Each structure stands twice: as structure tokens, then as C-alpha cells.
Image (cartoon, rainbow, N blue to C red; front, side, top):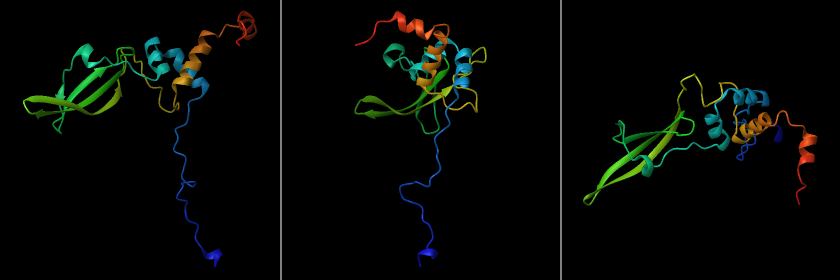
Length: 156
């Protein structure tokens, strides 16, 4: 009887296909770091864009979408290639108008000289840590590891 039983997939998902994106190779990351501007690398290394606050630049809407939400676009002041598009809802509460951010998404522009924030397609995913490692390796490429160790005090 056990021989005729069909094999069922586990509810824990052991048979599921791996959906994780492939990470980029060290060579691909080194090539990207070599070609990217310092401003793009600053955002990539931190893993965060620097968008100005409403208090800093105010709140100006650029459009109304088909759902009736107010659209606000904000450019990253560090790399200049990331745009956060925010959707805001406006409503009346008593005599006051109130606004609430409903959603936001991120898109990337192409730079003046063709520079892109993301790596070329097919290169794999580049994490902030991988970018930082590649930048450090580039900065210290002429440094002898033996000399570097000799020049530093032992940590306690």
C-alpha cells in the first residue's frame, strides 16, 4: 500500500525552488565600483538614499493620479539618480485639510553621461557590504598587508 502512495509536497516548503537572486561576482562588483561616480557609490555603500525632508524643501505635488491621489516626486540629493514617488491622500477633517502618505516607490534615472545607479542586467545583486568591500580594496590596493599590520598597534 505504501508503494502506491503519491509523494506530497511538504507544507514547510522544502521542495520549493530557491528564489534568491544570484549575487554578483567580485570582478563584476570591482568593475562597477571602478566606473561609478563617488556620489553613486556613497548611496550604494550606505544602502540608503538621501532624500530631503518636507521641512527642508516643502511639499509640492506634481500631479494627481487616476485614483485621485496627489503625487510628489523627490530626487536623492546625494547621487541624483534615485527618485522617490510618493502618493498622498488629501481629506477634510472638520475645517482643516489633512494629508497622509499612502504609498511610495523608487525609480532610477540615467545620468547625464549614461551613468546608472543599478549594475548592468545579468550582473547579479550587489549588496552595500559588497560595494564597501570593493571600495576598501580599491583604496588599499597598493598597501602591503604585512606593512599595514606592522604600522598598527595590536587591539586589546
